Amino acid sequence: MAIVYATLIIKGKKTFKEVPERIKEQVKQALIDIECPELAE
Image (cartoon, rainbow, N blue to C red; front, top):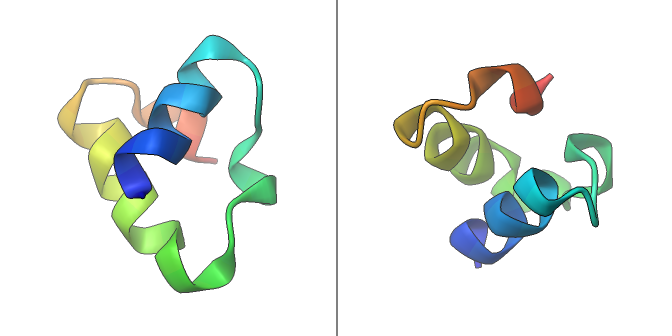
């Protein structure tokens, strides 16, 4: 699920603030792993 949210954030469909709290850390790590840490703010 974290990869799905990370993809949506990269495509501009969602923002990091819209990610459910329970998976925020996983989504943040996924964004860092794909070299887009600026989107995890």
